[in-house]
Length: 179
Length: 214
Image (cartoon, rainbow over all chains, first blue to last red):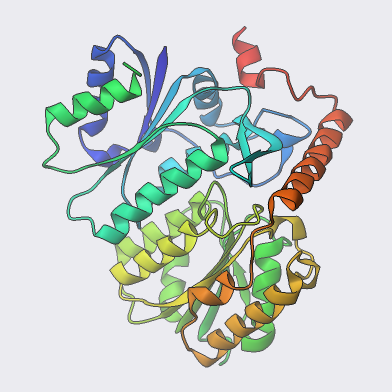
C-alpha cells in the first residue's frame, strides 16, 4: 500500500519524522512539500465534474500530486494549525482535490453526502502547534470530522507539539499504515 | 456609514456567484464597494487595505468545509504584517449542502483570526443550500421564508455595528428530513449524470488520473 504525505515546510522536522516512521511499517511513502510546488488556487470552474470529469484543467504541479492521491490508500496532510484549520498551502491541495471527488450525491445518517470517486482511502490530518488554545484544537478536529463526512472516508486527526514523543509518532504511523 | 470605512470583501473566484450576491445585499444597506479578492500574485498590498477599514465583511463560498485557500492566504498575510486596531469583522459563508455544520468552520476561522490579530469579531452568517442559488437572489432559497428575514436582520447588525449571534442563522435553517433528503439526493444526482452524459463521460469509470497510470 502507498501513503501520500503532503506537508507544509513550516512544520519543522515532523514531516520527515513521520515519513520515516510510516516507512518503518513497510508502507511505501510518497511525500510532497507543498511550499516548493507551484499550485494555483481552485477557480471553481466546475470542469472536473463535467466537461473534463475527474481531471483538473489547471496545468501546474498539482498534476503531479493528483495521480498519487488518486492511487493512495492513505492521505496524510501535515500543517501548522492556523486559525483552527490548515495553512493556505495545504488548503490549496484540498480545494483542488475536488477533481477526485464523486459528483453524485448519497445519503449517510439521513444527510446528503458526497464521496471520493471509486477510491477507498483513509484520510489523516496532522496539525502542528505549541500552546494552541482549546478553541484552536477543537476547530482543527472539527474540520477533519467534516472532511471525513463529506468525502465519506475513514481516518483520524492528530495534533503534535514539542512534547510529542517517539512512541506517539510510532502509534500514528501504525494507524496510517493500518497495522 | 460611508464607502471609506467599510470593506465588503468577496472571497470567491466567481464574480457573479452567491457570495457576491449576498455582499451586494449588504452593500444596499451599508454603502461602500464590493472588492474581490485577487486570485493571483502577492496579497501583501491587499492585506494593507483591510487595515484602513473600520468594518470588514468577508463573504465567501465553502470549499471542503471552510473558506477557499486564497482567503486563508490573505488571513495569513494580514496576520504576519499585523497592524489591526479593533476593526469590526463579520463573516458570511455559503455552501451547497443544506446544513450549517458542513460550513461552520469558515466562521470559526475568522473568529480565531480576529482574536489573534486585534480585530473585533462581530459574528457571521452560515448559509446552507447556497450554491444552488448560483448567484440568484436569496428569495429563491429553499428556506426563503426564514432565511430572508434572518439575513436582513444580520445586515442590520452590520449597519448598526452591533454583534450578531449564531442563533440568528441557526434558527432560520432546519435540515431537511429523510424523505426530502432522498428526493434531493436523487434530483441532484440526476442533474450530475445528465451533465456527465452530455460531455460523454461514464460516472462509473475509474478516475482519469488512474486511467493514465494504467
